Image (cartoon, rainbow, N blue to C red; front, side, top):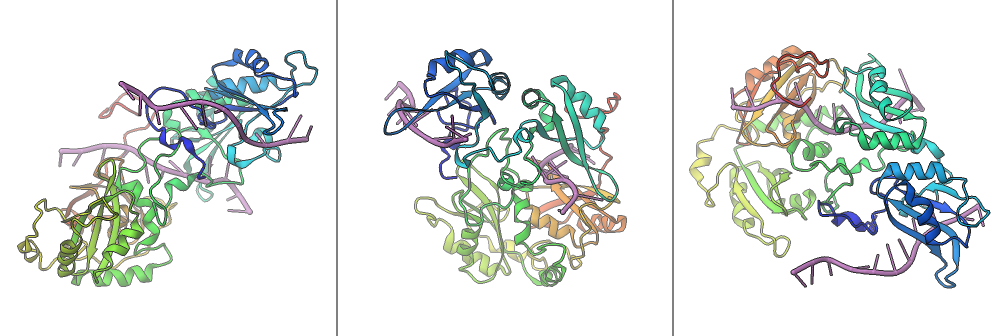
Length: 466
DNA sequence: CGACGGGACGC
DNA sequence: CGACGGGACGC
């Protein structure tokens, strides 16, 4: 993984890729041929299928003799697919030997022969609206080629769609055309073969624990890191409510909350500092309760929230750490939450004598969560005056029984909360609407029904996208 | 005022 | 049967 040279070329400038083997995916072919084949032979035979970025006839390092293998890199996956399917088994040049044409494996993973062969190339993983049926998806994707099957993944209990599924085509080429041309709403990618999940999905998981922040994931790089919802999501596990089974520790933590006073700091820190490092830094001052990198703040900085269990500790931490170079050359900026003035105003603290560090209203102790598959009894819509980490929100809303899910919309300070019990939802509204969480105001109300997804009946349109 | 995410297959 | 180079930021 250290060998990835392509990372720095994220953006929009034009096109020469020398080494970006797997971009787009499966656009490079591995060809087993004859030692006498030349680059020109391959160019002549393969350029009919599309733009070729690179042809490489592999030679022995020492003897310079051809090894009888070659790589041909196309710009487009579908061109590579067409070439692979048509040239495999053909002869080119004046040679007798037939070519064996395969999709090249990723540079760092060696041979491909033990794979399920076609399995990897004919199946797309897609996000599927919950209202869609297998037939809908089949009809939609049949425009790109012959669909062999569609699978919508469903809950095993109630058969409700999970919101994603698979489309299997009869040929690599069809899958490639669909991959390139289907609506972006499907977020199509080539499906991993059934056994090996989570190979590349780690980038969404936990944010930097002991790794520095990685820059860009590969294709389709929609912003993955600039909102509290997604960056917070990975830290779920480090927080008070470690999981559904850990209610007791959450309970104990929550019991302590109401006695503490405000002590929330807003910290701007280089994005090469990860959460663990930041924690250790602020933990120098006793009383650290909470430390969370929340969002990107600039091209090279993140914004974090740091909470102490008493205001003196927070003031002291600000005093000692504000302006510190950490690491060398990168100053940390520490502000009292919500205040823009550089100087600490202690009267600010006094005004909040009765408020706890996390929320300015008393909260009940933490309650068991509902399963993520649970039936939603009530959905709430929440609006924040600033972003908050997902972990804090989850914590707050888990003070009522049967919380299913909390999320904020990308790049917005509003979102949804789902409960399996109406009564919990109503209590959450009653207690939290108008409250402040770490100095951030929150509104909580019943959510409107979602506007019909794509049933196409013209009606209330408040948004133009669907 | 402020409105719709992510997701990996019954192992 | 078979699996990984050369080139190079830019005024």
